[in-house]
Length: 288
Image (cartoon, rainbow, N blue to C red; front, side):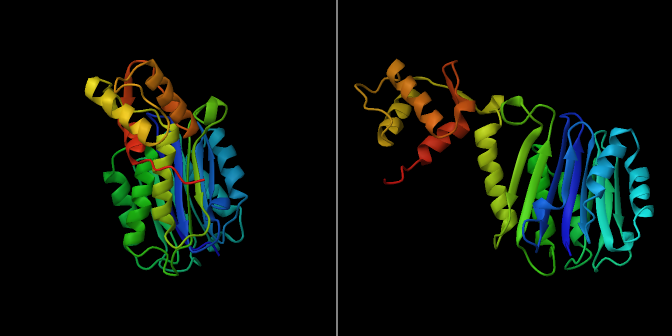
């Protein structure tokens, strides 16, 4: 049984849909989350019926409201009282369902743009903690989902413990190279602290794939240029002839960024972002 807690959410302004989930169950991300960009998302859990994923998305694609979709799924499944799920559509309308035979504590709540739910929980405060944290959080949808998941764990989480977690956010043409919709797709399949590990992976994902915010862009002036030369020399990426950030140093920085998978943050405007600078400052080359 997928005794777990999850949140499904939408950010209509950014055209993003996401799911975050944690469970004392191996590879929970392989079962619970189902999403389609521009359409909606469903988390199916407890005695999860994975057929609910494509069924719900097809109904949402046809314009049905999440409440009607939830009613249709529950009424068409003889095992519905063992199931739990949360649904959100691209407009932010949400629904949640908890069958009467789900292991207590079990329940769900909906709010503006989200549905949070859980079963086999440590207590009745877990789901409200998820909902409150999400509503109060700032940042990207992915940030807010992980904050909500962590709040659920602090409130007790799955009473059996922790094992796996997952975070998926879809957005039209926002996947790698713009060829698909998988904006964020991270899984921790077996870990003693899966939510903490998921948060760490999200920060790496943001470094590698999210664009720098305007407030994080720094002009490379003389002082910063000298530091960049020093840092590039320290990590073995540059043998400087002076402390000037010249064309050779600039090329060395670009080469370093490509090696470290930071090519999406390469700039040609005489600037560098704080995250790339921080990465360079903290970088220590692993001995061969």
